[in-house]
Image (cartoon, rainbow, N blue to C red; front, side, top):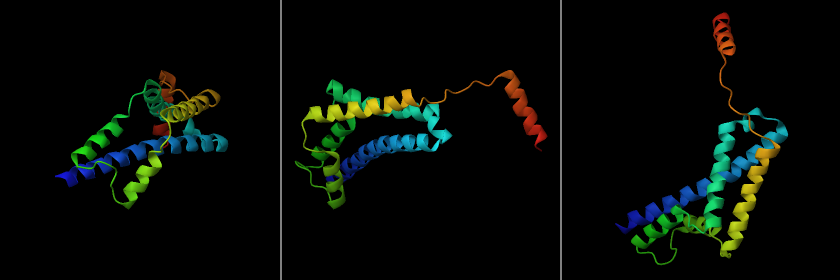
Length: 149
């Protein structure tokens, strides 16, 4: 049974890494997309979800809340009988890369600064707000579909 808890803990760790990787990759994509004038990086929903993702991390850090995924991983490792981190090679290195031995305030400052950077992209290159279809545009869309056949 302990092998299942260990496997589950490793999976939770992978989810944490994926969450952080997505946040960083999205910011890089947004910055590159703005420089290349890609229209999709101004998508309101894409940008809003990105901002929300980093604001959650920053808020947890500012409020001193441990990430629920971290807590869950630690509980699973305890249930697996692990007192210290003892995963396989890849898991061990991923864990070392994700969890540095810094004072908590260093992480808080980093998360808040990253969140401010994401917010700055919102202000300096705002997303396009979704448009509601108007009656004239809906009629044009219907007509153009019929004409294109």
